[in-house]
Image 1: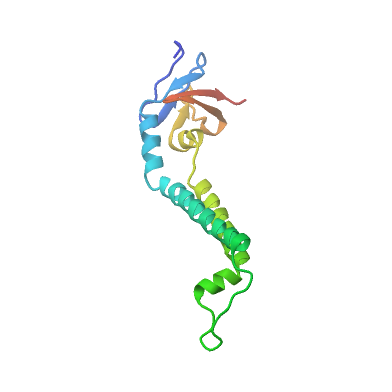
Image 2: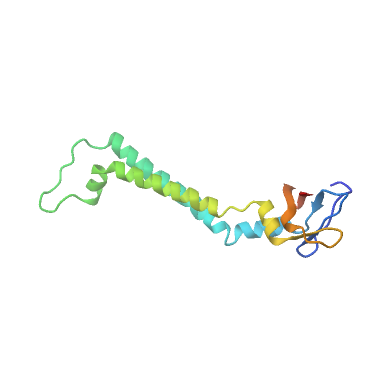
Length: 152
């Protein structure tokens, strides 16, 4: 980092007029803990639902392409579950597509960007002691380093 670095002390970033790049100590560890904790669960289960939905869609498309043209079943006992799946392969593919869409939505709900995480958990204070948290623009550089600028 350059000589214009600032340090974050217990949830507060002290802004200086001569610096735009700040080091927020411990941010990357807290952000990683956040992603691995309860916030990471929707993202994990969303990805899992996408994989399962893809498999179900592939099954439906595969049955439609390579399945039997005629399905025979006993009139008294009715078709089995497998025969229902063979007869309605388009619905199976559609159900898999819906599962993939729901998984994508759930995955995105679990995602919070580093800039939003910093803005929601840290207070930005000017040299005069004024809280300007709602007036800053933050860009994550890497690790614990951020570019912070004050909007006019």
